[in-house]
Image 1 (cartoon, chains in turn blue, red):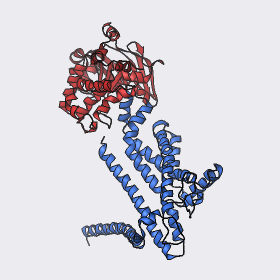
Image 2: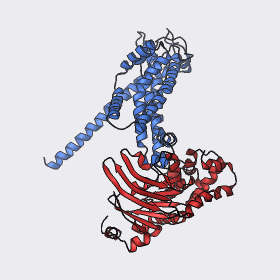
Image 3: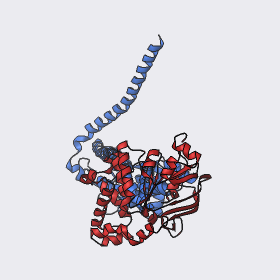
Image 4: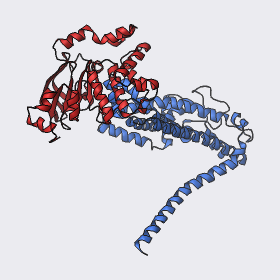
Length: 285
Length: 282
């Protein structure tokens, strides 16, 4: 076998390995989706969205779960966006670059890797008990906001970094203050990237279960929350609850719930991708 | 608040156009006083001594070219007049920098006010990623102007002065990034003159442009001289010779020679200047 042949074989072997690696992921995902679809798709109906949880599987619905998820998402966004974007702006635009900034940067990135249950424990101790928020939407949202804060901060910084220095110079040269420059030029130019980061952060939060269980989200809530001080449940917890029941009918409900959750997540990620593409097309420096 | 705001209360276009010829400004222009004056200016970036003992006087309504090889300090010198160097960490300045007999670095000067008075055009066209109209209006808005009609009139006037109005008048609300490089640069000039500065700093304004855009901008500089005092950094010797009244040659942080452009290009006193303009180094 000469050198050329070895090269050809290596070449195709590598290609086959790469295709196989990709296929494993896709096939697994495909099987999962098909299985879930077969199990749960027929269960999805208007009634499924408008029914309260019930001991009888065929009557049970996800009303309290999706309304709870909505409450949690909105409240989390309201808390996480101003804090995360504000911190990102400070770190990128105001703080002096140096050892301290590097230290902060590394730690923020590390926070993104902390297991979510740890955030749950922090939330339980600090928000639920110390600040007496109780097992409420507010406590859950603050906990999730902490969880996604690193993502929001990092993506804000990255988007601000992508705005060229010449834009800032142009603004200063016209007599604009730092505040005006940041607020009227830099932030709008970075908005697409920041929004993408926020959506990705929220789509992570929407699937979180562990920290919410720790801060006391209920598995059975017979009412929809009326304010942020009410107790709540969310979709993943409802699914978790159904899966852990012995009756097979509840597994069908769980599958249907998973389909709903998947669709929401896909829609959010899709929106993020569209936003990012639009923004890139829109702004060419 | 600002003088523009006061003017905005008067609706007549006549008054607004007349505003540039306010008596106090005329007195300054004709009184034989120097518009710009630097005395013994030294600049440092950290430990690096970029400008050494530069003293120079510039008359009003003239174009002064700053030439010299890269790294000679000419851009740094240009940027002391609107204090853009302040944004660079470790920048330090000694000596006095006067515009209209006021020290630019004194405590009473507010840097935002100064930058309104001393406009700047950059090397690479840097329009904001907004509409053409908003690009020009931005300088007015950040300086507190809210009068809609006044803003519209000023934007139109500035675009006309910058000789780009005919090309953009039908797409004022389109994104400025869709314009060609040369149009973008003229838009940036319009943006700078919309706030009615009295000095315009240009940092290699045509180095990123094609020859036709280049000559358009040069013609424009010639016209703008009627109203503004212009300092222009350029690497293009022909450009310096064409557009400027006076030329300053910088080399390694020193102001080597400063004289009438004609003298610099035909009969320089220093050998270094001679060598540079004839292309023997740099």
